[in-house]
Image (cartoon, rainbow over all chains, first blue to last red):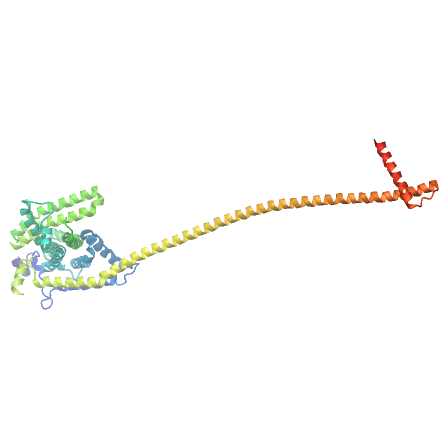
Length: 263
Length: 67
Length: 180
């Protein structure tokens, strides 16, 4: 692929975009564009939510109402329904910030000029997943004790005898090891693939229209490529929201499973 | 034409999780259509199952890049 | 982190850059802390205030309702009291009226009896007086007349009255025998 890129730079045939397109050059020092975007998103989220919540009016204005829709959704349908009404308030700030953080960073991928989803850098997604992993395991240990928590997560109810030999390692693998990885990679892979698709159709359309021979097939292909670009953009709007929702929901469900009483 | 065989294999490997996710949500939709009041409980189970099935695809992409 | 990491990262996007991992975790933790401290309490406060306002409104409405009910009950009580009072007064008035009528009737009865008695007594007295005066008059007239007729002086008082009495007794006896 590197070789292909080099050939493309030298001119000639079309080079498909690859993972290398996600390694942006540093803006200054070691700081790259996704790092700036990430920090920018945190500041933006804090300023926006602070402005929404500041007045705390009984009759909300338009801004506060929008904030309350998001906050109420995270608080009631994600946190309370999955964690249970006893403990959920403690996790609402985390889940609320998580949802907005993922959502805003994802939509950065569609906003002109910014146009890069931070979580298509796998490190960013690992960072969030690591925090969620620490959160739900920590909460489980705080609730059940270390061994109690291991027993709680690894031994499902109603299993006994020989089956335990198979089930326990599987549950440990699935609940402790795979969960954070899938949490991170789901987000990362969706953002990565979505952005890759957008780059592909944008560059491909550009190449077919402006650089390749102006044959009917090439022009038709170029136009179709841009049409697909808009189609994928609309799809990405949905996927980006869904990823933020799923990431938050799964974190809430893992936390809910960890704090649940014996089932 | 350039590319790696890994990616081709990954494309094939996603068929299984793809079908699984489809089946899970088909069952979820059926369940909600029959008992709309059970939507909250079913949604939790469906998302969990979806996460579990998708984990296979995610392990697949990890292996596709790693191997 | 230049050459080696970049070369590896180019090939494999799954291997994270440690700097990005730490950055995202730290930035997110700061965001969570800020949201926890400044944003969530305000939203919760708005929720609590709203709940309190709604409950307060309901409570106020309830107390108003209770107050109105109490007032209505009181008014109805007063109304029924007034009705009772009015009925009682009417009853009393009727009784009083009846008593007055009875009393009046008795008074009138007594008065009429008195008047009648008085009249009777007066008539009786006048009759007695008339009898007495008639007797005297008739005596003197008769003696005068008789004197004239018989030419006899009947000035002697004792004799005169004796003669008259005798005459009258004869007269009465004659009347009585005549009536019989």
